[in-house]
Amino acid sequence: MARTVAVPLAPGVWRIPTVGRAMVNSYAFVDDDGSVTLVDCGARRAPARIVRGLAAIGKTPADVTRIVLTHAHADHAGGAAELARRTGAPVAAHRADMPYAESGRVPPQGGGNTVGRFLTRLAGGRFPAVAVARPLADGDVLPVGGGLRVVHTPGHSPGHVSLLHEPTRVLVTGDALFNVAGVRWPVRSFCTDFQMTQRTAHVLGELDYDVAAFTHGPELTDRAREQVRAFLRRLG
Image (cartoon, rainbow, N blue to C red; front, side, top):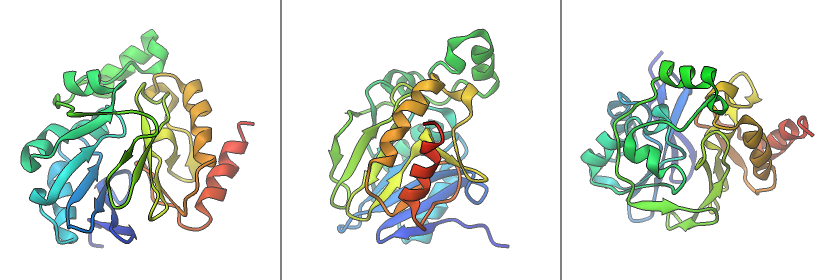
């Protein structure tokens, strides 16, 4: 079976898998003028696959005018330096994750305990550092296809964000939630503060959207908001 390189989610919105068919995902938002905003850059080796995904939708690195990181983990920011070099596009990330992106070090994981520090090293706690030109804050609306709203959902990392594209009603959850064999929490040991992750993810049940797009796992297109809310209610 041919490898999927780009999956349409809504007009001008595409999922680009960087590992497997949906194990790790980046996203491309194509504006009316043809410019592309890229959300997440995969791991260090992901840029080649992202470029193939762009080609599949008729785009090249030169069309990318903005890169947005949901958080500074190696499987999302590891390819950012290379893609910034290839595209010349500025990188945006939440200000709380900026120090980690710019130093090429992942934020503390596992609550900062000894096991968490070991897992951080084991998982690859380093990635190519990338300069962040645009610090993001909760509530920012980026000029992406009519408005891409930044929703700060810390816990998985201090500056983790989800992104709501209001015109197409597509929500990119980032790693606030996974959809791997069903909607689930991210791996506890890879979160800076797992309890905070659970608290802040509840805002995703309060937003309005038709498609829930995950950075780990395939999208939900059928009653997406209701499915997310049903999962979140389990925590009480």
